[in-house]
Image 1 (spheres, rainbow, N blue to C red):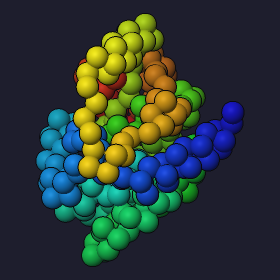
Image 2 (cartoon, helix red, strand yellow):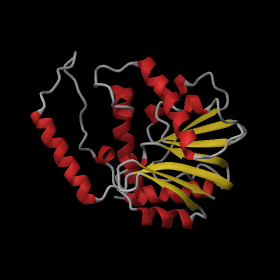
Image 3 (cartoon, rainbow, N blue to C red):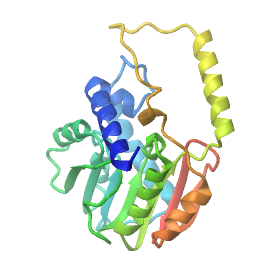
Image 4 (cartoon, rainbow, N blue to C red):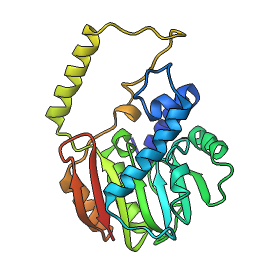
Length: 245
C-alpha cells in the first residue's frame, strides 16, 4: 500500500469516527456514550498547557505553530492564545469541518485537510514550533510516520522545535499487552450503554497503527537537519521526543 493509499484509508476511518463520536475517539477516557463536552474542552486546555511546559521550550507568543493531527481543535483552541499564529492539519475532512465550527471566532488559526502522507502544502522553514500528540501511533505505516518527522524538520525554521509522541513499544511487549487487554475484556462484564452503541472497528489499521524505534526516529530527525534533545518514555506506547533544528 502506498502512502497515498494509507492516507485515503486513514481519512475514511477518521471521517467515519468523527461523524460517529468525535469526542470519544479523540479522548476515550470516558465511556463511549457518556461524553462530557465541557470536560472535553477543559482538558484540552489542561493537556496543552502541560505539554508545552514539559517540552522545555521557551515561547514569546510571537511564534507560528503547526499542530499535526488537530482533530476538532480541542488543543488548537488553547494554542491560539499562546502563539501568534496556529495552523492545524488533520487527515480527516470531517474533523476539520468540526474544528472550523469550533474555532470560528479565532482569526489567528488556519485549519487544513492533510493528505495523510506529508506536509507538502507548507513551505520550507515556515514554523517555529511543530507539535503532535497521540497521532503518529495511529498511522499504519512506519515509513509514513518517519516521513512526517522529516517533513516537520523541513517546515521548521532554524532554531525551531518539534515536540511529538510516537509508539516505541517493542513488538513482543505490545503483543503481550494486547493479549492481556483482550483477556481482561473477556472476563470483565460489558457495561451497557444508554443507546446500545459502543466503539467499533478498533482492529482497523488506522486505529491500531504501527511502532517505530528510537534509532529510526533519530535517523529521520538527522536527515531533516534536527537533533534529538530529549526522550521520555522510551519503550512505551507514549514516547515523547523533543527535536530541534
